[in-house]
Amino acid sequence: MKISSILRPEAVKVISSTTSKKRLLHDLGEMAASVYKIDAATAVEALMERETLGPTGVGHGVALPHARIPGLESVQGAFILLEKPIDFDAVDRAPVDIIFGLFAPEDAGVEHLKALALVSRTLREATICTKLRANSDTSTLYTILTEAQTFQTV
Image 1 (tube, rainbow, N blue to C red):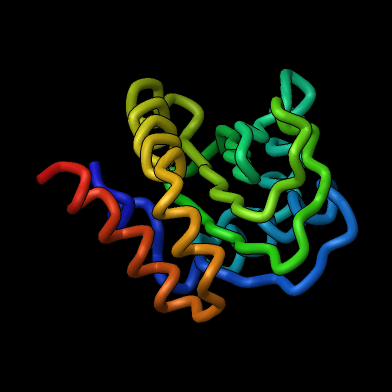
Image 2: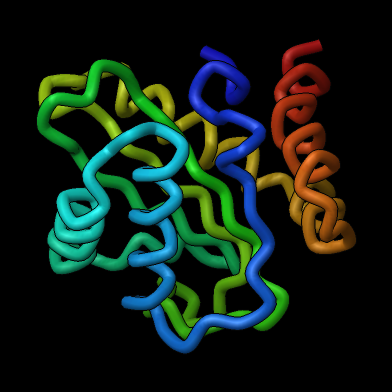
């Protein structure tokens, strides 16, 4: 699995400011609706429900919110870079500015886990996060994300 198979260029966004974790999850839901034709309300509700199980802020300014969506055929991703980090209840209590949301079919099972592992591995690399934070052009961000695994697998 490659990031380019789960993330479309138009699902990469830079947001100058957002007021809260809840607002950010709404932004992800709206992106899922516009890019992948997922019902926005369903996506937001699923993301918020998942957050009640435990925060998806994994540390070092990174969050990986994810949810299962009825009727979705494959795992899809959305990436947001925040210019101003927000509190996300992350495990290390650090504010979050790099968010990679995943939407998976209800019965995705192993595909959902593979996608989550791939994104987690990619964003655990400090050099990749540094490059992401240094850019605000969405096409550059997409390139950084999709080329990252090429270097990791060589």
